[in-house]
Length: 257
Length: 245
Image (tube, helix red, strand yellow):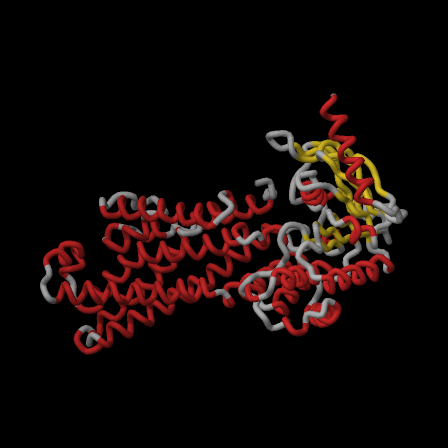
């Protein structure tokens, strides 16, 4: 057991080092934060100027004010854009080993491949938690810059939905890691991300799929009242199932392509 | 329990791919203190064989034992004694040479202090000091291969498996590798190395096995005078025999 934990610590440090040194993870972080902030700001300004198309797109959120409107827009954008960012990050973390050929160096080591796969997922989780916190900070700065600190002081509690939605979205992106492994490259992971995104968004817009774990976060972003807490608690089943599948796939891996 | 006679032993190894390529019943051993070279043309099955030996592929039939332990059941204690470079070196583009080597040392089971000492030693051994702080993405192919070889050897493995280790090395790198392997062999390591550069292999091999069409078809005398002629004669004779069959 100690050996396993030691191996996990080594693998975690190794994967964290790669993630920190890579421009890919930094770029995804910056693009996600800047993208969500820019889109949210643009939509809010357009809605404030009375553009009917934007108001129609916002739906019930368009009738809200202050923090609730800002956070409503941010979580909707994050449910789709964040999923893309998290899926691309996982696709890179797992798929790059095959695309770069480095996977062969991960065989015949005292640290097992499933341990390395779980370390990758853990690094992803830590990074995603950091992104959730940073996104919340960015949204808070945006809200205070728009004057909500004075005009809607009580509404600031709405901000709590931002990290919650970002974390839930990161959890449902984990199948991308499994797809990148069995497809042995980045593209299968990105493809899986697109499929999850389309299914989640289409069903959520139709207000269907409350109890489908990959749909619940997007639905909660659009219509929080329609998704009970118990439905959100089913979301961790996605990383549990696909994390286990991922570890199994790395355990059974062969260089036979 | 007596020590196993072989660092690695493959028996009746078979792994066949669609189209007929693969390894078709191959026996092979590497003894402690021995350099065993395998030579063959491209597509002869050398890399497939090495992948089977290291658990990168599962055999259809036959088995592989490292220090007497079945590869399919090998645990950390077995793998920490193995160093390999097959296909791609452990050299991540975003990490500098030192960080790659430190990662390799830790992944091979060395603790922090051991890893730091081993990295310093192997950087000196492979003359990598100038490149220690350079990202692998900016290294030449040859220097990246030096980093990969250093990563495979820095933990003092007892079994070393290297596929075409000199393919991108300059002459100085070839000499460094040769001397490095001989030092480890003198300390009891067993080395399996593949190559199609017969002269360079012959300089350090104790045994040379010819691989053709996934089979061991004969041996070459490392002290022989015209290895290339003997190699091609064996390969062509085997090709003719298979065509006639």
